[in-house]
Length: 477
Image (cartoon, rainbow, N blue to C red; front, side, top):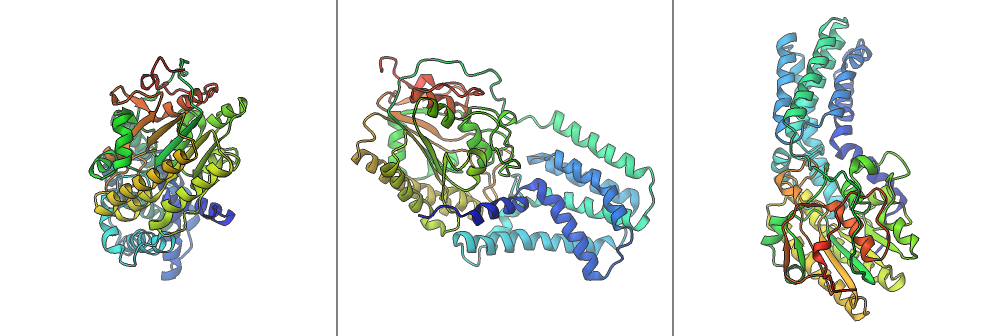
């Protein structure tokens, strides 16, 4: 299986500008407004003044997410502004044009053309995707209930300011009022963000393993896992130690989650807050891989191109995400076997992407999503059979988990809808208790420090995750 090319890595970063909700809003609004003026041969007089007046609102919508049910409040500012300024008939065709472009972009360009070219969904994917966009609750551009009122207000505000070209008090008090409105909502109603540990990880003895393999089924929902037929993973769950209350981080985006998993640090400490990594240095904290190098051991992640931005090419083997989704996980597992045979790392984390991509393109509440979980189970069984044949499982610890779940709609993740928040997590190995269920609340930050202790290394310096000591037998050495 080929690695992600340099072009793919750049393209992935560029795509995130349209996929992530924060940059999409200003990019889309500017594109709609200017293209509408060009198509209608409208006057460009006052456009610059209107943009300057609109800029505070663009900044405000960058700062505040309006996650989950808070998005319902986004219609109020639009209604207030239209009531204050009066309904101008010139706004209606602009609104219709913007809404039309939005649904063309999300339903046809993204949900049909993009997914067909990238992962092989059929040309009729739009027949389901439009429903998923309307239900979506995550932080991507495919959240119609969030993006439409935001873009609607920005377009109305920009056009009104461009026509009037007068600086009056409404352009001062309206942004201030909207800022106060947003602050109150987020301060008093945004209460589901995980309360991550704030104290440094407390060291404790854990029996060491020669190898650790982390089997990550990206985007696997707990409830949909339970609906799937997964004999291999289920055996590991029943014969190992399961953490039944394992929570992901906010925002629940893949690179954010992996950064917390392999540093033990909170997002505000490792500095990764979305799938877009603006700097070239990646995580600001030290990592599991740094600590393993200190004791002469090696660790690798086999995953998507985005992860290079967080951890660097030295610690990440990339896989191309441009392939038919039916063969993606198969190719990843084949590549993982090669890495074991050629490099034999002490730590290998494998990211299977088929389940996540199916959720994004076809939804999580359909049979295709469960089928991808079942396929992941069979492939991971095959991978572990290869490890056993090579003698790598004699003194190894297996960790099975998801980085995040997925919400309804387009299977999005970010705002921590109920399908995203708590993830499957269990461990298996000769040092691990069999049949133990730990109900204590833990976070995926615990993965990093637990891995380093298992491999005889020091805990990452900025780790806040709680060591998962309950899982291990005290008499082991």
